[in-house]
Length: 390
Image 1 (cartoon, rainbow, N blue to C red):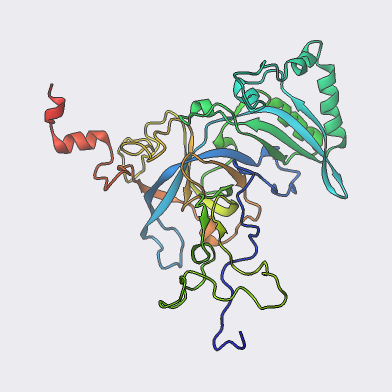
Image 2 (image 1 turned 90 degrees about the vertical axis):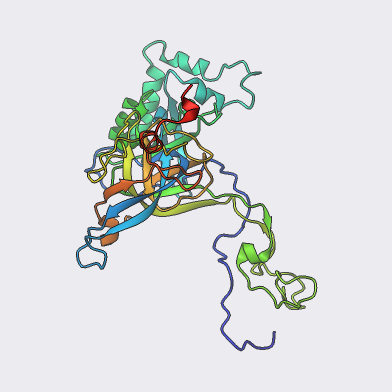
């Protein structure tokens, strides 16, 4: 091209290259929040969640000076199911010039079948002997285990617990647990972190012990896959004129004659979606507990109802465990495992610090234009049905 008549910035960011399918199908934490506050009590910094679906809420805005102050707004929200996780081990890391190096790992005495299933390709054909020899270390006073824990406390600067989800509590046709490391932040020294991690061995940890309402968190996971797509959809390049020969959803010039190669910065067709992505600072609107039938009750709406909408979440079903409600949308399809992490960059804007006052949570059917919030409301409106008479 000899010259450009108008400004033409490039289409699409090169910061996300290579655009290829991820290998981290269940999400992967590359960075944990900085452990800078030694005065804080030891605490966990991440949790596993499963995407259930979306709904909408009505809330009051509390931002003095803002145009919407003391007015009501409707927000789209995502509901994630968060069954309790189980801590099964602890791992210590030593800082080296080339990054962190694992010093040693210590596992609990009793490990669940869900955890052991993840160790095998085929659980049915296996001998199911995983960690049976390791459990013998606890036989005579657990001296070896205590020695390894003392080594972590003495030499390590970073301590992380090994935990797994409990998919048997969900209706996902999944039997293998998702295993992940969760960093322990806070505590005066490494020994305090190790003691905290050891106290959690074989115990369940819940979402409300890690996150709280009105907190901002990061969501890590894999986006919805779209397969092989062309340049217009994949990169957002402009379509060519209507009369263009051999198609118009193309890049007209893919580079000069020399160098006689196609540059890596030129938009090309290829894989779109199923990428690993991190969304930062999503606000927690509400955390619900398992078995709470009035978890969606508010001061303005006294109807006793749970979070599951009429007919269940589309392509997911009912929520029977703990759940968390986040503002806006989340990456991934329904049932996808996501990771919730404490914010790397905690926002300090007035919008991020606002206290959320929910007035109404919608639980009408998501299969169509839902008219009723509960089954009782529907029965009361329709009256006795002929189909239920016999």
